[in-house]
Each structure stands twice: as structure tokens, then as C-alpha cells.
Image (tube, rainbow, N blue to C red; front, side, top):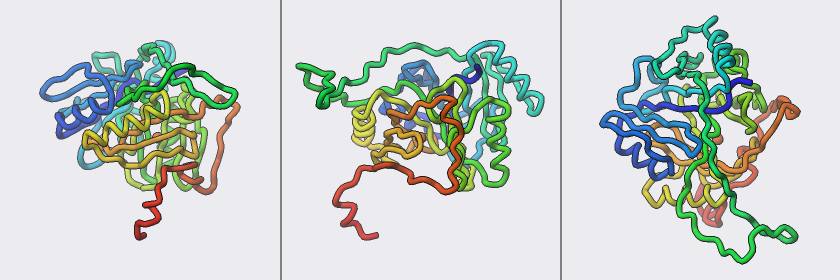
Length: 304
Ligand SMILES: [Fe+2]
């Protein structure tokens, strides 16, 4: 089948203590910590690496300041991994590191790794909900969650340059087996990994016409987790980048936070799942960013 999921990501950062505090508060779990770097993981075992001195195997940063340096993709079998590495190596330099990751660089300058996926099962218990005729919760009052713990990194959004955007996308579709699910011609291309059911595993966004990390999204079990997780972050002093809403493309409920490692992070829930019958949807103009976003009467009171 091929690529299943994001296996790990690495950021090159300046302020390790601040980044550690951010991802602790965000709900990831610490795996390792030294004076130079830290490793966190999601409940399904994907790892986030924060590095003040990233490996020389990685390409240089694509933008000033802390930023994403590499996304490593997990592949289901050794045969598929070999096939993908061979396909990439025919056109681009590939180097293998001691941990079994094959490293290359995409056309925008982001590090790209390939390795065997090592998924970890986790019990997911969405909160049972009640509505007329569909009662799933009896005799049980809800308790506050107080914070969120991400199940998985579900997608990565990268900003790419307008110039050469088709070739930048073709690296992922032609060599790595991603398929475009929604092509928004003025904005970017949503891509699904072959082993993923989410409407997108990746977004390559050319609208800002500037290479950099846009965001990484983390799936949580439900809406309460999105809201309470971000409330917890705000209580801890972090800044919200985009208030609660539900996207048009993908339908995911979201809240975004500015991240000290570069770009933003998203708590996400209830994204569309799509199979091959969804095809590729081409949008000549950009659909509205969201179906809805949280609004208060104070928005109307604010001078434009
Ligand atoms: Fe997103």
C-alpha cells in the first residue's frame, strides 16, 4: 500500500525550555530530554523531535527562526519502503541513517524521511452523546476533561512557492504515492496518503507564496477535547491563532495555537474520511475557509 501516516517530525528550535513547556501543555508525552533536544510522542507513538542542533543529515531551514526541518513518513512494509526509496533515489539523493530512516529533500527544501511505520494501538473512547431518539449516555453526568491528549498527528500543512508549485506537488504524488483529494487552484492542494482515510494527510499551500511551515494538526477524540485542550493552552499563557470553527474542506472542527517551534498547531476532530470514490475535486475559486466559526456580539462592536 505505501505511506500510512506521519511517523515523526523534527523542528529546529532556539528555546528548548519554552518548546518543552508548550508541548507538555498541549498534551503530548515526554519520551526523552537532554540539554539540546527533547522528544515527545502522541498516543499512537508518533514522535515530535525538538532540536537546538539538528542532525547534519537534515537540509538547512527553509525560513528564518525556528521551523520544521523534516517530516518522516511511515510505510507499511519493507517491500513498499524499498520501492519508494528506489523511486526517490532515481531522481534525488537519498541517505540512510543508523535508525533506519531514509532521508531526502523535497522541492521546497523540507526534509522528507521514509521509514517503517510502527503504529501503536490506543483505546479511543469518544464521549457518548445524546439527542432525541439517539441516547448513548444514561445516568452519567459529564466531567470536565480539563485538557487534551492528542491521538495522532493527522496532517501537516506546508507553505510552498507559487513558482514551481506543480513540480513541488508532483514530488509527493508521483514519487510517494499521495493522491490529490481537493485541488483549490488559487490556494493549494490537499493530499491523502495511500494508507490514510482522512480527507487530507497533507496540504501544500501556495497562496502565501512563501516557503515555511504552516501547521501540524493533532487529532483528538471530540469537540470537548478541541475546546478544553485549547482553553488549557490559553490558561497556560499560549496564544490562540484561530478561534474555534469547522473547516469547509475536510469538515474538521479546529482550534489553532501559535507554536514556539515555528508555525502553528491545530487541535482537530471529526475530519471527513474518504476513499477512492471521492476522486479529485477541483475548485477554480477558493471555497469559504470554514462552515462556521465561533462568533460573539463583540465582533460586531469591533471597528473594522
Ligand atoms: Fe489543518
